[in-house]
Image (cartoon, rainbow, N blue to C red):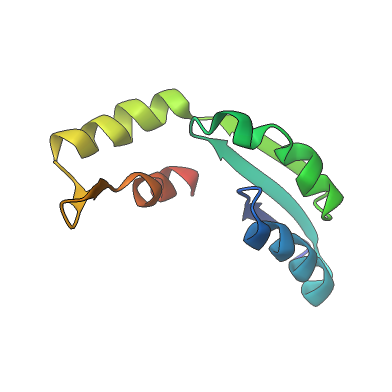
Length: 97
């Protein structure tokens, strides 16, 4: 294996993961970030990934697909966790993958 694609959020965990993967496995790390509608949170995601060691960064706008194929069906299914909040974060994971 010479390279790996990391589902990158721009947060501390995935930023540290870039450096750790590079150092531990001596392979190229490519960061992939799905734009689900995070807005300003993605403002410096490219720069941050590159600064922590990613060789390339891809940011894919998947907002329309996320809303149509994941969020609306979630609403229709009344998918709440403990009747308190919507399953927004977990419902996005299959799309990101």
